[in-house]
Amino acid sequence: MGIVIIPGLPPTLRDVASKLYRYGYRLYKQGANTWLLTPPKGKLGMYITDDQLVVGLNKELREIEKEQGTLQLFTQFDTRWGKTVYGNKSTDTTMKEAGCGPTSLAIVIKYLMENDCLTEGDETICKTSSSITPIDTAKYAASHGRVSGHGTAGDPMIKGISGQWAGYDGTRVSLDEAVFYLQQGKLIIFLCKSCKGYGLKAKLSDKPKVTYAGHYMVLSGVEGTNGPDQLFSVMDPGRNENKAMHYIRRKELETKAGGFWWVFKKQEPAMMVCLPEES
Image (tube, rainbow, N blue to C red; front, side, top):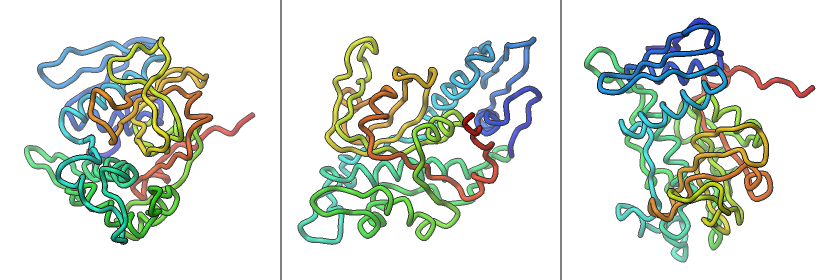
């Protein structure tokens, strides 16, 4: 199934809707400013107003992707690779200690590869192998961004992607561009530099308490307007679920982020709807 064109649906949401359709969802316009999203069997349908359409569709997509394993959280301390030396020097530290960069990259590339798999009847056809793990991205990043004694430099890690994985590429983006892509269902790698966020069970009205001095993570969603309290969903490869960062505010990303990177399939930029020019 390719890109789904639904009358009245903003072009920026076509990719999100198309992914939902692969899982059996259907979306119908109901009146002037209301939509009906019908899920696969066993789930209840929902009505979504125009002003909640971006957030509503993206949240539902992320939920089903995690349920189906299309979006998978890798952790750098996983016993399968946590003790593996990350780098080409004997003095380099392990994935558990310094592998947040390549682990975040593995999350995103794995996701892109999984979405290269299309369902045709009862058969799933994959254009690429989706068996990538942090072991693969760490081997790559060892000579593309690894900084012994410090961690990973983001730009070299991202710029070399096309030479390692044919059909994929990446680029540094601004925070506003990151928001634009997140609203279209994309994932964004970011570098936290003394930023603070919220844990899984934290009250978002309280002060954020989860912090890192320097740590790569993945932004997987956004809601709210572009003010300081705009809320972003986070996939944190550095800690277990109860101690990890799950949410972060825009004001933290504006002042305490070392960069944002979008990794994509090479044909994606041509399909994107351009960012509106500033007036």
